[in-house]
Amino acid sequence: MKIRFLVIIFIIGSCTPEGKEKLIPRKDLVPLLIDMHIADALALNHSISEQFDNLDSSLLYSSVLTKHGYSKKELISTLENYSSKPDKLIKVYDEVFSALSKKSEEAKAIRNKYSLSSLDIVWKPDAFRFVISGDTVHYPSAFEFPIDSIGTYILTASIKMTSEDKSVNPRIIAFFFSPERDVPEYRQYFRETPIPKAKYSREYTLVEECIDSTFTHMRIIIPEYDNKDTSFYKKMNISNLRVGKLKSEKEEK
Image (cartoon, rainbow, N blue to C red; front, side, top):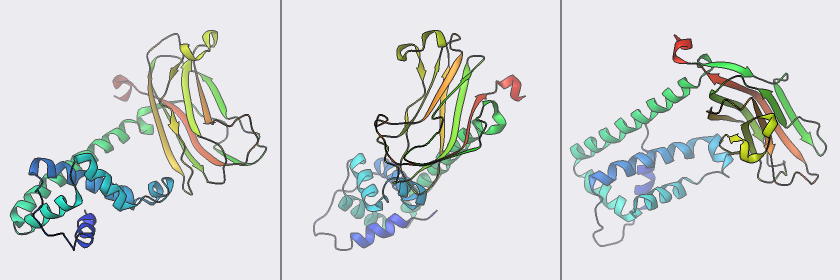
């Protein structure tokens, strides 16, 4: 794993002001360095960076420092202090890499839990891909289908919406409902998920456990937006749209 941000910090902080800065205690330094490495990975991910207007790594580092209540000067001073004690620095980084490895394994476990092999596909549209482009587009932005039981449902899709699209606040809306009482207060919603505008396609996974057996249907709106009563240019691709239900432990065995 690279420690690119440490090099950047030392370059930026090469002209450290005179005066001794407070050192960051080890119990605070380890979680700070963990978050620094995560920020570094985000900045290097071109897809994520593009979706957030080219993330500036230095701004990410500053936000991490602010979150932990320390300054760049204090971090530089602390790392300079550790540079003369390599054995202690190695022990600090053993903790950092161990924690990052654990987070990586946890993320992998979550991905595996919601992988296709652990799901029963309950719905997918007839078309594999929808290409929406132009001022007047005939596209079924709302999809509705029956569900047969309670359980954990996973909605997945690949979506690319470019900056040419003029929708306001585009997002994914999904919920369980009963046709007899199809009003907001009698629905169970998935987490509302924004659709960033970018050059890259992004994978979306929405998870919700249906706990009410009176809900017999599910509705998905992609995209929902605030200016739907106006005419505007649309530019979006949707593919791999599907809904699966998590298999029970007995079914997996």
